Image (cartoon, rainbow, N blue to C red):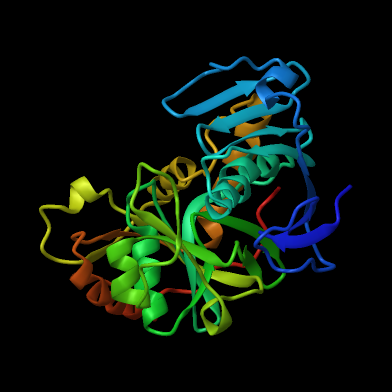
Length: 324
């Protein structure tokens, strides 16, 4: 029986175990129930997924006969997401910390539930500048969280790290808060947040820490999205000595947003049609530019200054709602 209720990404989350999330609010766009699996057998065995289902290194994924999805991260946990996305059955593996396990459940696993409920999350991190969200779009290792930490150092609020949930409103496109934490490499955490120890690690293969964000550093409410900056891959910026913000054509914006989906595993025709429709509408509603900068930690305050100046030049966009 679920005893705890929370909200994250504008979604109501009911759980039979405590989660590091803010308390439930009355206005939620969808609901997900998180339930601990029985202790008798692995979820793969219980649901017939097989231990090597579509294994990619330490990550495993399988589509099940009833429309549900099985996912596992070795040494972290395994999950079954119901066909309608309204239930996640989970099992934490002994090798993982609670902080690490919840990062995977409330990010990677939850993304399957969001897509199954016809939502389209983006792979982006967002901060709040003058009451509006500014998002950094990019793949793993592109520097989204490090750039956000630099904004936190300057007094801006954190909205979400890694998964960005957007929803239309009469005021514009709303960006919703994620879990109150950020994932940072130890040196970045020390440089911008003044802390690097006594934090949970992501997994044994990375130096990233899971740093909780609270108080005046975290925004707990949805805010309108002012702009999206897609980050150039580090390999494309390694030879650059300058920082630049470049305009993109509508076609380039569309491509970047499609590439920036958080979940690439669910590829049914209906999902792809919905995704293309959402991205097409978002292209017309929110300004998006390309940010190119050398990945040097001491240059990040300069990047922040240039972005703040660019935001002052962002023209207003229409506030009509993109189709769901």
